[in-house]
Image (cartoon, rainbow over all chains, first blue to last red; front, side):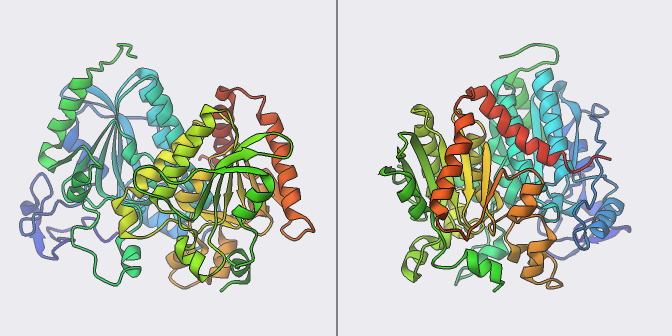
Length: 268
Length: 257
């Protein structure tokens, strides 16, 4: 995993390539030279967003497997599990944000680029079901390259099944808030990412459907540097706000407080 | 190119407009999304069958010669195509008509324009709308259909495939690409379940039709009518539930451990 922080005090900024000392990243994991926010692990993201000690993981029994015997996939899964310490590319649980309760779904790009597979889809559906049944707002932080090709159509149908769960959440209604972080692409972008009642994007995130390299191959001229950037999507009216990482928690608290959903109170 | 893919992408391949012509003696085309424009690869509208049944159709084809292929973007639907389809399924719900989609399309359109027009949202909206459709829907894979773009039409009560058609998370070329040239595109077709036979055996596809038969169009129309009949007595709630259950059962084949 190229952008995963490896052992040692010095790491390379994946954007500008400068060497950055552990003490220089600071709590927001921002490069002191190019000011890019580095991709966070799910644990780092949760620590920044939710009240201390409030996160309670929901059951996540599914472990990935290479059911179709796709070449090289078993090895990739083993490597991803070892390097990330995760069992799959998403973490689900309940938490509070400034005492407002929510179901948290946090994708982690350090596990096979956060790709959507059978286990990830099941976890997200489970989280949406908890939100629906307990009338808890659901916050999904996306970070994904899209559907995981190694699981074929089994991965693709995660898209329509998650959207069916989103429709049930909306029918209650329970608010869905999506936070699009770097990267949000392909099957995640084209299913639940933009289905939030409020859609936020983190500053600097690349968000789109087809990957920039694939699109570049079809174009005679170089793509602009800000192609598929969060700022561009905001200008196009595709997201409600672009938020700097240090302000993300406060914005989510404002949104939750504005909806006013409290645990144990029936809404809708 | 792989022989199987050549066959699916051939100029004389059975196309959606031909099926629509035979299925609907009276046909009213609906054109454009009313906001951005139109995607020429999409033939959409409604009409009546010879058995007096009103049906809405969404057909996607690649075009049959250089000019029409360029015009239709090789079957890669652009954003107005998904948005037009959304408008047309709304209309189908309003008048209680079943929706039949006929596909031969590559993966999604990779272009700055599609990104700028919100391809992700357009596909997501159509997948969601098809899932919640209160009228029956059926998809027919006349050729290929890959990725979220095809799924938007395939989120249906019944799936039909011609015996040599393909439906996958990504094109065989894209599957071969993630293996860095260790496997050919032909090998890639066999690495994942994407053929009609494989998907029928796995329960996702309901009917497989031989592409080589004397009157393929008549056979297809007969299958459509057979499959539509039981769906038309179902309530909207049951149609929505059946659609989700179909894909849930497919996902459930991937074991938990």
